[in-house]
Image 1 (cartoon, rainbow, N blue to C red):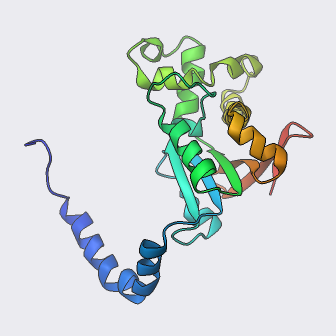
Image 2 (image 1 turned 30 degrees about the horizontal axis):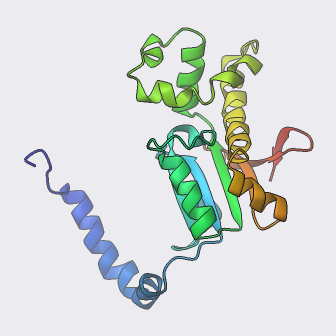
Length: 216
């Protein structure tokens, strides 16, 4: 494949720096991880956004989190149709094979995917409405929640509330997976919804009893 090129030089330099320092100082730990396999206590579903650094937020070490990232941290509803379902496959592996105890959905401020959904639903992004738009069809998962925010006058607040509703949507859809719902019912798995403010470093959790988010 002639299109595939070697790594950029700055990444090569960073790799060698990591291998000579971080890896060298912790080589026994890395070898243990390799030989004993992974045993994460939690799965985190977060956005692909490069500004969302899950392990830094929680000060996590390698091997602590099973992390799946996609546009807007969305989880589709359970749909065993034989098609390709990357997010559903990751959830199945975490819950059924790794047997994580916690499943965290992490949304964030200034989410481009959610903004795109708002623009699409308000008629300002016809390119996302096209059938061949992968992003648009993915954001269809959130589309029904737009009805709950469409009358918010302030555009920034409208997007912020839709970002949080994206987290709620994923939590709702997770409970449509029968084997996951069974584990939640038995108490062997807990679900958590979080939203982080990138600029302020804030973190909020979803309280289902109050149906709103509160500061952690």
